[in-house]
Image (cartoon, rainbow, N blue to C red; front, side, top):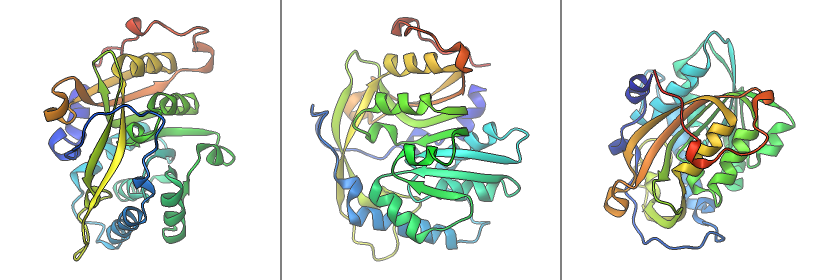
Length: 284
């Protein structure tokens, strides 16, 4: 299975933007730039352009992760419910809809408040909804076939808390990709700086005046992440996509994909397992 996932997940060189800035420790601070109007407007505009394109337009290589997730989760199902954490203005939904035209999708995107409001007002598609809070979605949907997240959890102020919340939901499959974890014994917080044009699907529109945005990146310890996975998932697999920002971290921070199946509620342990014993099941 590992080799099939590797064929579908975007390679490191295509999926990881170049990041700049120095490591610093400020876990209480928040990144304002994801609420920046210019960034939100660009992501929205890119999504609108994508929706106007001919459906036969070749897929961007970064689309393959959502195709892998949906393809692995929808086995035999005619309808799939998805919680897309950090899904921008819904381009993952569009990709899945075009690739699986006979599959009915109930797709909930969780994004920043500004992104969710803008997307909900401009992009109205059957089966696609936006919210800035998971709790708001739970009033409509209590169980999901798939939880999907692509390069998002590390940009929350508490990635382990966010991962715990996602794993605590009722679901069948979970697919988390482009998720950096550190092999060191301490988590990392640093300022990631990139061009605004790097956000959202596809190239920036002609005439776009680019600038830089900086946002906090919180990299959790691999042992802590995999301890949580072992507590909540009955089977899970790992794909190591290679180093994350190699010039800065060398091989100590790895870009990772995790895919797994939720444990039945009666299998949850009463006490946490030791992090040293939390291991993934072998991948066939």
